[in-house]
Image (cartoon, rainbow, N blue to C red):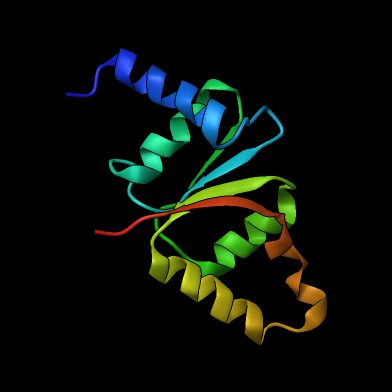
Length: 110
């Protein structure tokens, strides 16, 4: 059972061991929020970071977000990251700057 105390402690551990987001950060939710994407969004939500919720994963939408927001993190399945990398390889050099803004990514699969 996930209690409020569990979720708060998980967020505190995230701050101590992984990242210290603030209101300048953006968290992209392109995976199910009922799974890891939602859990890993809580530390960002508690610090006032932007929450960008997408209806589904789409490479073009992620690249557009990366162009608009300087500090972006997201939770992604390995397939999602593979699609981003493959798309980056196919873009002209001048268009590749957006992926440099991806500050962090949690990766998970089952």
